[in-house]
Length: 173
Image (cartoon, rainbow, N blue to C red; front, side, top):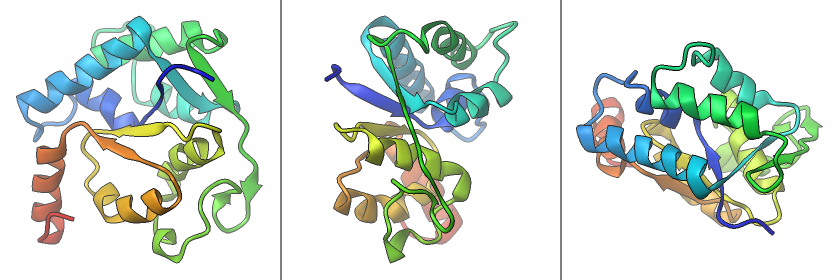
């Protein structure tokens, strides 16, 4: 299989573009570094219907890439068919869970529908690659349920995420 496959949540790209005003400088730098590392020697995993790529493109500017996130999406567009740099996973639809590979778990029933594609791709991939997550604090609430299904989330801005969770929900997740 591939070396260190990774799924990138869209907020990593947005943070790298400087579009999250409450983020720490270290979080910004971590996001920039992770995206840079993927473009140099990493391997990204997306869906073959390009739901993930479409979301990236809707939130970035690849025609005039200024931010690191924009440049990352442009790189992905150029490498989406390069099997040594990108794996495309087929997702099967499901009436209730959105995707057949999204875990059937009561603790995940309120998982954000737009984010289910990231989890479904991880679950459908034979290596269950980790999902890079920057600033979406709701993922803290779902982390233990995802782990039960062999899906790991790498919080690359852990301190920021805990701070956001505390502010939004009154706890650290």
